[in-house]
Length: 507
Ligand code: AHR
Figure 1 (cartoon, protein in one colour):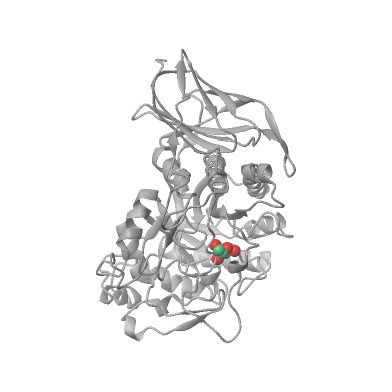
Figure 2 (spheres, helix red, strand yellow):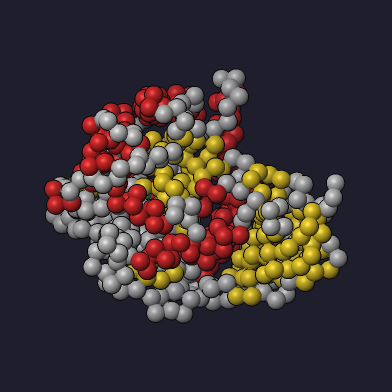
């Protein structure tokens, strides 16, 4: 049996829960847009061609923001191809994913869809094949009220009110050799700074994200962040991080502890950004946009884009089918993001539908939840208020990749408007359950609202269109209140959410 003692106190707060932590990502890639969120003629499609069954699941998932339109796709995208009368929009070759982009869906459709999904946009601009001028054009089209060529074009296209998009990504993964228009850090940093300055002439209040490394293993990791921020520190607000996880050599324990890697990555980029700031004697802090993260079986064959003569429209790409173990890892990654809520201001699970996604669709048929849907939906719904600093003590478990790690990882949120404490936990031990004591000071726990678990058994099971749903959270009835403590048991390799009612002690 593993053991863990978690000490928390509503007076010890890390930061307010950034609601933008529960973002997602829609890229023109595979079937994310076409036959994913958009499928005119589908039995549930509305007048705009948006699938109603998908929208219902998106709302249930509880996403707060959506990054669009890429991803690698954005680096050779011409945004203006996707606006105006659909019959006049050109079909183009998408060089990133070797597909034919019909442009039937573009910015205006995305913004209409997003309104129905009740989420905020994160708009990426093309700094691969394009530059400052086109980024500013897109900004004018999207955000200017009226009276200029592009704003009036948007109004003519049916969107009378400006979109007021606040958060913008200056390119995507510009360090990657796979990126159309890859640049050196200094080249990119200068372009990002120049583009940011131009965009701020329109609206100084925009929030701008510079590209960090494509992942922690990039050979230029570290120097890339330093050099980009040396050029762009004063002009941007956030720097991006991307990370995808999969088991290596069937090493389940290391896979379950993927949050260790995410913690290291966030801490490293924070330190680099702060060191650039310190050298500049700046009081400004660069925040983190973890705007692509997930489990992704990158070694799987269907991840390879098609090639050759054929340029298919919306081919099935990156359609990973997730297991219960993958859901536990996703729950663990959300714990890491929440733990860093003093520096991670936004995050996007990549992606939303069909492409390494929590939601899958059958063209013309049903939409269904993958296993990874559940920890995301529960965390997005119940992580409210402030993140608390959780002091952890207890047993460790051995991993090949990260050495000895705490068997139980956890984070806690406290919502003083409702008096709800929510604890999110993962037992990364695969060999034994974990007996957990949650020790609350500074508040009186008055009851347990709910305790649910995903995993522990059937770790390899995957959901399908016809069910059953293997990762549907099931009641964990071990949770018991004992004076100031709450005790519960976590099955091996599992994710758990414990919600309690508490009243804060009078000071
Ligand atoms: O999310 C899939 C791809 O992964 C994105 O297009 C790219 O930014 C990343 O490499």
